[in-house]
Image (cartoon, rainbow, N blue to C red):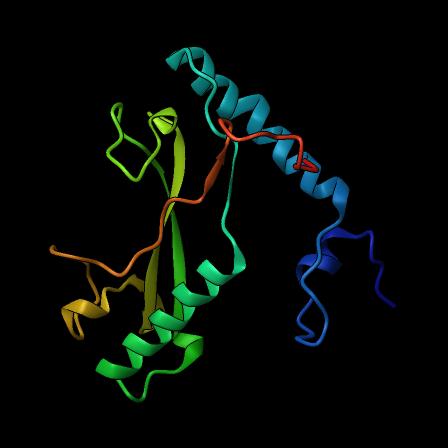
Length: 160
């Protein structure tokens, strides 16, 4: 019998008919660890109030996933969805952002999502615009960025 409060039970939930779950206390602990360590260090050393979360609407995420699947199928019709993924890179906006990036996002954390493709059990960054290459070498890359950062957006909507 599984215990829903056991983080190991929740994190190892392999039943695809059930939603992925984590105990709320575990989530809060992870968020607090980040805020009390990495975020605090960044804020003190850079003398700023860095972003601690980023929000993307579901249609943006679904569209990005669909585009990864579509472009991967174009260059490799035999690719399996299990071989595709997304790597989330921690990143920071430049000191003077260029539109459409708001100026109050300057130097703040963000995420850049890059497609990955598995080859010989390794998940390589993958740019379908470069053919079958399993590397991102230049030009335009299939990627996603620019969600809503908190701060500067309001944190009143956050639970953690």
